[in-house]
Amino acid sequence: MIGAAVVALDGTVLTLAQPVLQHDLHADFAQVQWTSTGYLIAVASLLVFAGRLGDRYGHRRIFALGTLGFAAASAAVALAPGIGWVIALRVLQGVCGALLQPATLGMLRAAYPPGRLAMPIALRASAIGLAAAAGPLVGGALVSAYGWRSVFALTVFPALAIGLLALAVPASSPPTASPAASPVRPPGAPPAPAASVEPCFPPASPTSAPADRGRSGETRASLDLPGAFLLAVTLACLVHVLVAAPVSGLTGGTAGTGLALAAALVAGALLVRHERRAAHPLLPPALLRSRPVAAGLGALLAASAALFGSLFVATHFLQDVRGLDPLTSAVWTLPLAVVMVLGAPAVALAQRRFGPRRTAVAGGLLLTLGVLLLSRLDERATAVTTGGCFVLLGAGFSTVMVTATAAVVKRAAAAEAGVAGGLQQTAMNTGPVLGVATATLLMTLDPSAGFVPAMGTTLLALAAVAALGAAAALGLPGGSAEPQPREAERPRPALHP
Picture 1: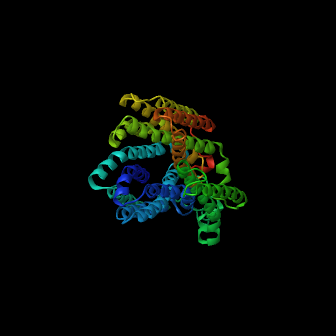
Picture 2: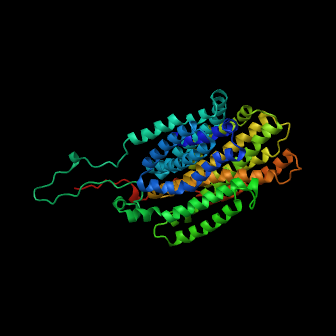
Picture 3: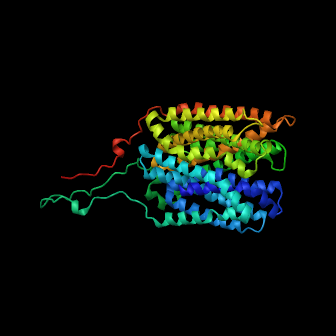
């Protein structure tokens, strides 16, 4: 929870620090934009491979590496002498963030049986919501008092502490039978086999067995380095296109968005071809063919795109139309975060009673309604009417996020939990980029239109995206009973007469 919250806090505090950073380092707008874009590209391109590393070498170990690296990169950014150093270190921060994010879900999947995953995932979502709510307030106060470097120093000590703790706490191991409990055998009887306890999760595939780790060839095969490279190139180019296209167009601008789009299409086609032929693909076919997993990823992608696109438009509305300062704007949006923090545990209980499908569909409809009501605001909007919209946004998004995340992670075998977590995090990181790019593009289509009419049209489109997420959630399981491990997967001590 703390590791996930540290990453969320870092992302929210940076936005308020960028204008001051630009002034202090004498940077232009494009350079400052790359402090965010470089981080996003690094994170999105490496999440799935980082999850596979956790499956292979242990999620706790990869989590510790990611958090300690994140702490070191944050401290280095706080001391960076120029904008070039800031951009490079932000990319390194993104690499470390990619390592630790899937590991947070992988560790939960390893620690809890599928039927008990919903509440831990909900508490993790609450921690993320709390960090996102505190970020603008804490960031604004720190930048005003101590400058932009202080927001990067903010996450150093929590990340360092939790990384060291992850290394210090011994990993749990299955209980073994006590020698004192061994039965007494009559003289001459053959020795009884040692008592054992079967794991509570399905056994790992042969490629991930510990015996394979000592053979470098099989390790490389199980990691699927060519597939990881092609996926990284595809996602990196796609994120670059989504960030740059609304500003420069698909074929213009110094960013080369047209070339990046072509590279994404070619790398994506090569990835599909490679994964179909690979003996040990990075993306397990059984996981991708799972209807709940596909439905959960689609719902997460659509919901995060609709929410963050709407927040992008609403932030400009509050500051440019209502004339609020950044801190007051953050206060007006607090109901969203409060509902996410307090409501996520209730979502875990709701899906246990009503089932993932009905719970997630209801959340998607709440999110759609919140975006639609937000599109009706104008210059007369008050804190109460705006707060009501944000309550619906927070309730709807947290419901979809908790339910869909649980559906994705719990349907993965324990040996593939990191890849499942990487896919979930990829959807959660790509969706906001897609939503902001869509909002930027639609808001600038007609320069002669006023802000409020353009906002209405843009938010209607984002409401349609949220409705698509609700439709995708129809593919989630409908039963209210939590899936139980198969009999062969339950702990069963071997009993000997």
